[in-house]
Image 1 (tube, rainbow, N blue to C red):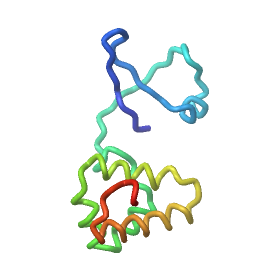
Image 2 (image 1 turned 30 degrees about the vertical axis):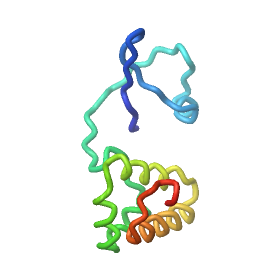
Image 3 (image 1 turned 180 degrees about the vertical axis):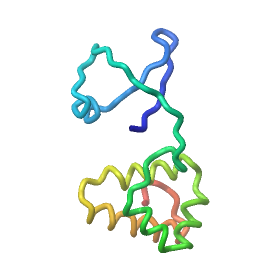
Image 4 (image 1 turned 45 degrees about the vertical axis):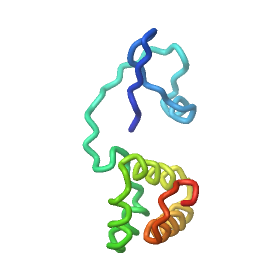
Length: 111
């Protein structure tokens, strides 16, 4: 699971998880858990949705436009598509995003 390590002077380093992760892990605030932290070796520091990977692999211009984005925008797109629940929705969104990227649209709100 991808997440970020945060730091605050008063408490030190900590991991922040959204409610969905809390439910999935079946933990509550105040629970003490052991975690294993590994370096992220993925290309984009986030999981690539299969649907977007397929669209990009079949569209060289789309891949070029995606690769030209900053790493932060790339991750945002991965999360945007990956959070959709239905496969059909992920495919549709991937197609739309790649077409807009090829037209030069890089503003996440317009994607």
